[in-house]
Image 1 (cartoon, helix red, strand yellow):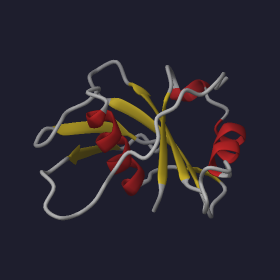
Image 2 (cartoon, one colour):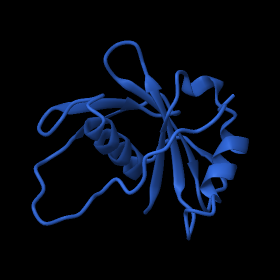
Image 3 (cartoon, helix red, strand yellow):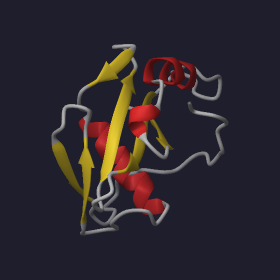
Image 4 (cartoon, helix red, strand yellow):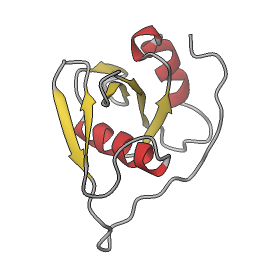
Length: 120
């Protein structure tokens, strides 16, 4: 499942439906993608909101999105790396703890870095 991860100052301030829909259908994403917005939670963890393709709106939790967020945040040196859990709180209020393992043949890659305009 393709995911786009966007770090924002405060996930609560994002117009998730409008911005998520726009990014989910962006021309650079051939088949579209789930869009995960993340922001620091203030206690060392992260908050996540997900615009999910197929649902075409916000979902209360997304396990693959939490993993994508943890992997991208680790790649950005913004969260725990291999072996340490990253705490991600979904819109449901549930905390997901994602522990990345060393690669063992699977593939995950960052395919694009960019800067988005106003997310408000």
